[in-house]
Image 1 (cartoon, protein in one colour):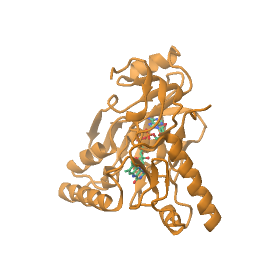
Image 2 (tube, helix red, strand yellow):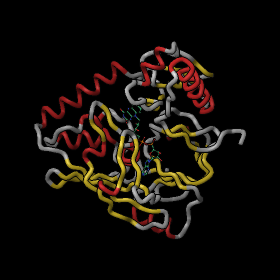
Image 3 (tube, protein in one colour):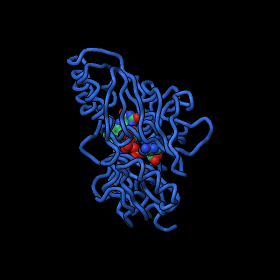
Length: 294
Ligand SMILES: Cc1cc2nc3c(=O)[nH]c(=O)nc-3n(C[C@H](O)[C@H](O)[C@H](O)COP(=O)(O)OP(=O)(O)OC[C@H]3O[C@@H](n4cnc5c(N)ncnc54)[C@H](O)[C@@H]3O)c2cc1C
């Protein structure tokens, strides 16, 4: 696809890990910060604007998105280091960042290796696993606002919690890049940690199906997967969407699921878990766009 040009009516199916969804009215792959800024300044993007990475935490509805999707992956992919400070642009995949850090002999990047998204998505979600979260390592970030102005924001400018990141001043800004710090370790140990983590995930997760990872956040004191399993929902299906038999917090696309199938399944799970456990499951995945009939 052409970079830094606005494209029209682009199917979102290939742009998310569930492989569902309608079309984006406008679509833009950003590979040049200055051009992005100029386009924002000139108000060339149809509103609303949504930045995406690899779509591995996003459910695009079947009716598509009426504004502009700005994709960072395949565009802003620079990565560099100055001693233990690492600069990476928002389009760098988490797995590439993890390997880059480990190869240079710094530790604790392994958790990023199993997250199939971009750094931009990980910053927005505070993605994490096995006791580590993205923002544990962030020193500062480069953002851009809707009028095309760039800002350097410190970690302290954000309220950060479990899978949640909020600009304290409520500014609408998007992530362009980040500076992260990792402690010095040993290259072999760091690379082995990545290998072990990836094997562990292969065992526990249905990675051969289209999915968006954990559908629901873990309610305090509980594991969403355990609650769903205890409610007898493993294997439960709506259309082509199914609660994975391997990991009950994962919804898989069996091949012909629509976004509506997935969303209906989400609602049914929430209803059943509330009925049986009196616990409200909240989605971790983000639902974007229009229903087909709206
Ligand atoms: C098999 C599998 C395993 C997973 N395991 C984990 C896990 O262990 N831990 C975990 O936390 N997640 C996990 N996920 C979910 C997902 O990979 C992460 O949330 C990831 O960080 C999303 O990155 P992305 O680039 O795909 O984001 P997208 O899905 O593209 O976007 C997610 C959100 O971030 C916003 N966003 C994206 N880029 C930017 C940007 N540059 N600026 C501002 N906002 C932006 C989007 O608008 C959207 O709201 C898993 C997913 C899958 C499919």
